[in-house]
Image (cartoon, rainbow, N blue to C red; front, side, top):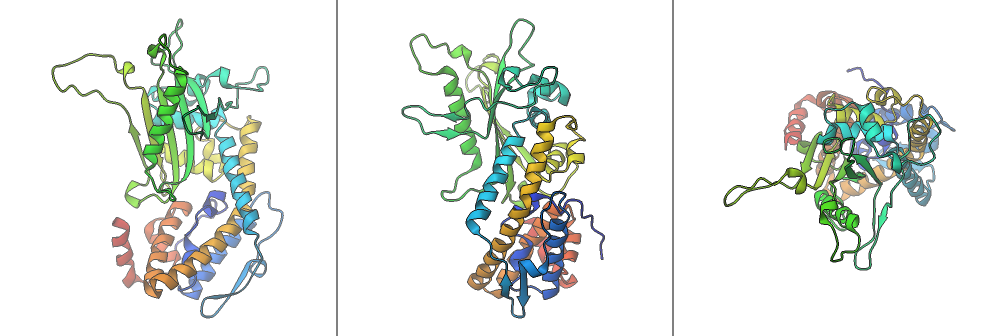
Length: 392
């Protein structure tokens, strides 16, 4: 049996998944269920700030045939509220300059050749509030996170701020970048369904429009500054797109003749999509893994947070809320697994559930595909089938 590290099992983001290991409980080997339950119990009971202990007795028991015999009553409305609080805690954490800076350094070209400390200082000091004297400003003020006009729809940004553009600024001139940073749980939103990149383009366009305000005969379009809309996507990402970053920007293409307009005059709107996946050493994904797993030691590899009380509190808030989210995820995963098995047939439900479980174990526990299949006790003669499906 492979040896696994439990250090990431207590991540609140680990429980954020809606369909993962538990979605096969209704049709899988009872021994597999027991192993997966143990992962839940170990993770939950090792929370630093836990207020109670999770056991088989107060969560669930399973009887033969895969039917639930008894479970702790869970208030779904309350669980939803806790999930919302987790989302809010996440957004608050991403309003700290120290947390934002490593993301900008890794994905925004203007900051590629600067240190994280330098990038931290480039985030506009005028956007900071409640700053103790002598400290590096820590909290990014949400500069009008809501934008609305008479004819336009209200939009709400997660984190909206300005930062100095070091490529165009000098001692006599300060040019800003306008940045919108969004944490998106689902890469494939539903009801309605739409591509994330289109929403990012819309947000960026609204930001450009907002810079000019009401248009008049004296509107100076030369005042428009560059915009970045950055989207961190966490869930429902196709395997082939996991651990990828894509930037969409305006490029010049001469069709007849050749022009020489400066790029800064037309490349003003950029959308960056960050698609997370399984554990990797690639800095941007390793760093974000630390943030969402509330792993202070991993975060500290990229930025010094030890003396920033706001950041430390934000990490602790996210970690504490993970306990209730885990219970909600368990219940929803089991209910969805049962429905899936009934609708699609027992065998199809098992295979789809196992495939999803393999992917989520790899992503959240940092295991290889072979280790994930071993944890699920998938027979050797069936492993090749799942390896092929993972490639598609």
